[in-house]
Image (cartoon, rainbow, N blue to C red; front, side, top):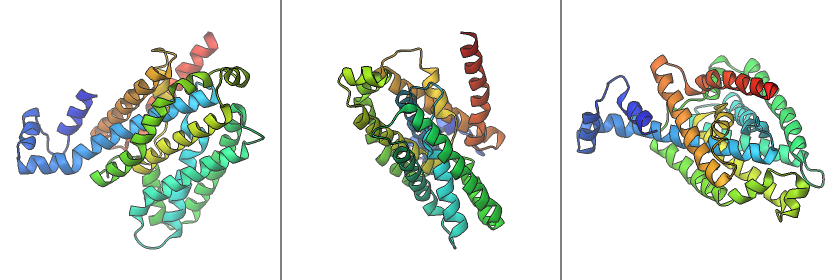
Length: 306
């Protein structure tokens, strides 16, 4: 992470050597402007968004008891995209500053709808997955319809946000993201033992003293908060929530270790994707699937041959 962060600070239209970074810290005005207003908030946002997605993915896989689950199964990406599409295409005037709020609201409403529809005197992993797939398909269809019917300029703004990118990060957005995500990350780590118990089936978890339905609701809310805040800050970025928990799965079965490891791995994945995206002039959200799709193929091949 230190290497990737240093490269991100150095790379750009104006390259900065390590001594230039130290000069900025000592008061060089030009280097300070480049680092302080553009590159530092961008790399900090990429690291925090990646950490949020990594932990949200670990929560999703534990709650749904499925190693291939990701926060998108809770409708977060689809709901966020629909919220932004409704705002940009349905409203008039400049609404760019409201797009993160619309994305967060859409993600929260979509996740809430999934949990309510999956409730039958309680929830189960399979119901959450099935309802999540259905809601995701519905929100995706409505979003596609809006992009077909909307004005081309509004559609382009919405699609640019849906691609997922860190390029417009600033300190204000980073502070907003930190305000929501850091407490949620701390609370999630405190619930690591409950996540360990969630790996067992409902009868065993209940016999071990876990208030299953209440804890599942709390963990789902934390996952929605983390992934929703990340989507609001950077747009829908896929596969990080799936890849990061998988890459650290072999470290330990205890979530007290797995959660911070997933956070570090998610931060490294997204920061690296953002760095490569700057080199090839593509948003990070378009590069993470290029990493994720082959990895999913490898996972399926290994499960088939186990």
